Image 1: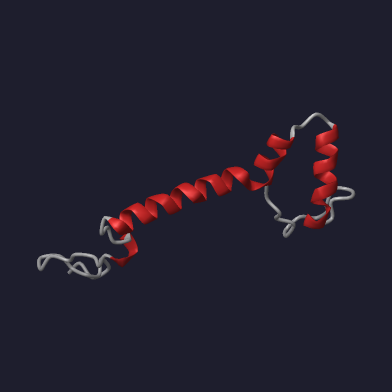
Image 2: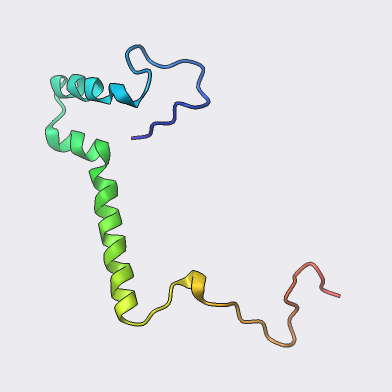
Amino acid sequence: MGAGYDGINFTPHDLEDVSSYPRLFAELLGDGWTVDELEKLAGRNLLRVFEEVEKVRENQRLSGVRPYEEIPPVVRPDEHANCSTNS
């Protein structure tokens, strides 16, 4: 659930900012949403994915796999390091 209140011309009545989310959730609960559904809406799925990402990171670290951003690019002698100067 996003909280991007920037760039909009008006907000829904009684949802002026994220501090009103508890009221929104109470309304949804009263409208038939389950607590499990509301937890997912509030970010549980995102947390679950992040936990899995952290497991992969830890497994790779223990296996000696370096993060991609730490591996320097390989430039062969016959290639130009700067693509804009292909002359």
